Image 1 (tube, one colour):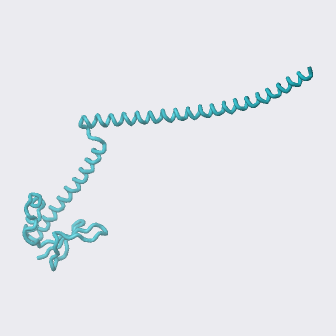
Image 2: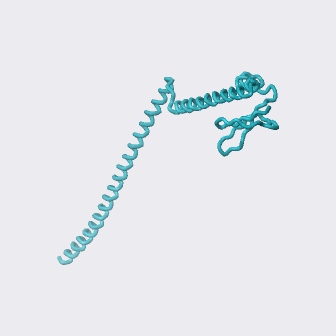
Image 3: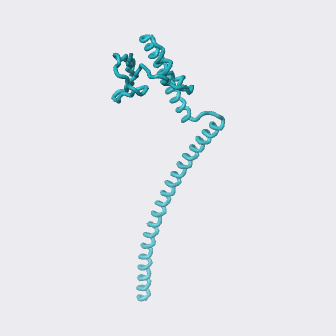
Length: 173
């Protein structure tokens, strides 16, 4: 019986060793499954957030699409329109200033020549804007930029310039 007992004790020791290994394997497997479960939950939360973002974007695009089909201008168009209106206001102010400068020049010189030959209306209507050499030379200067000359020639001896805003106007008798 002692041999049987020794065999049983040996078998018992082997099973205990195997149980310890199985327990460690089960514990490692359990940890791996918990980690995978946490990663899956994180992935699911991430995907749910992405789905919500995409649904919000779809709703916004659908709203813009419906608005564009109904003729309601988009935000970008409204911004462009506002910029156009601002630039048109500046353009109108510049045209008014040009008109006032022409009237001032006409008043000083008693001449209508400059106004008649350089009217933007004449240029737009397809008429020649320079029918004869002008006795006026306008120099515009923007801060720290070289002068630009109009209408394209520089007469020989100017009078003192008339300075109005950014413009220096020379009269050549």
